[in-house]
Image (cartoon, rainbow, N blue to C red; front, side, top):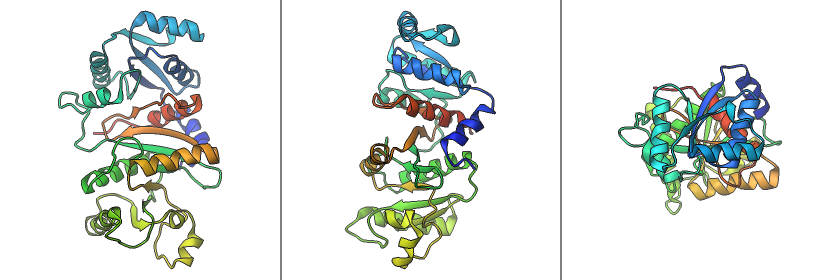
Amino acid sequence: MIKNFEQLFDFIKGRERKKIVVPRAESKSIVEACNEAHNVGLADSILIGDGEKILDICKEAGVESSIFDIVDESDDVNAVKKAIDIVNEGRASMIMKGKTDTATLLKEVLSSESGLKRGRVLSHIAVVEVKNYHKLMVFTDGGLNIYPDLDKRIDIIKNAVEFEKKLGNSDIKVALLTAVEKVNEKIKETLVYDKIVKMQKSEKFVDAVVEGPVAMDIALDSEAAKIKDYKGKIPGDVDIFVTPDIASCNIVVKSLIYLANAKVGGLVVGAKVPIVLLSRSDTPDTKLRSIALGALWENVD
């Protein structure tokens, strides 16, 4: 089981090098991230965009342009469509967002013609390494689904569990997070969590232990669970932290980054290939870790 990013990089480097395709790659940060992924043996890149601008950016950044396959296409929609075609042709195994806005990218990925849909909602996972926790933490969804309903939450959990298995984990524990351990009609997510737990017990929709509602102290600390007389299998050993909404997930992860020096990488999952969405505020290390997470993924039916 991969328990930290160092182990992840060691594992990826021992595998076949992956291929990234980037629509609208005319960005210094994108070029530098793809260059670093090449240098450390994670992945090679196909850059789609204004070819002359990409070459100029490579020169400015001191990056050897010959390591990239460059496809000339400066229109946002056409660039994304070309990226999808490249994936469907088997020439790339992940997509990384370039200058194209997220809405345009995801619209094309989710179109009926793309061939990348799996009948499952797309969701974002943030993979977090902190000094005081014994393994990687997966938080979801802090990037796409604002207030997910029951069906979307089921898909979000399925996506996260599927990813967790890529880390080599066969004993996956999922915490449905909120502020309390009991169903409370005034806290709407607890009602949904109760349904999810009952569904898991009756039909086992996912290969994992799923418990909730639980507060974060229960999820992180077995002693807190004893004090609160919480009976369950997950306290102190949670792998996947499912948050009530996009805001709470985003707040938790960014707090860990800035207050606990957490190492983080993120992916959009749920399609046939992973999608790396990079923020302008992401550090080079965060970008590289996100690419490594994408390189871990294998194409799925």
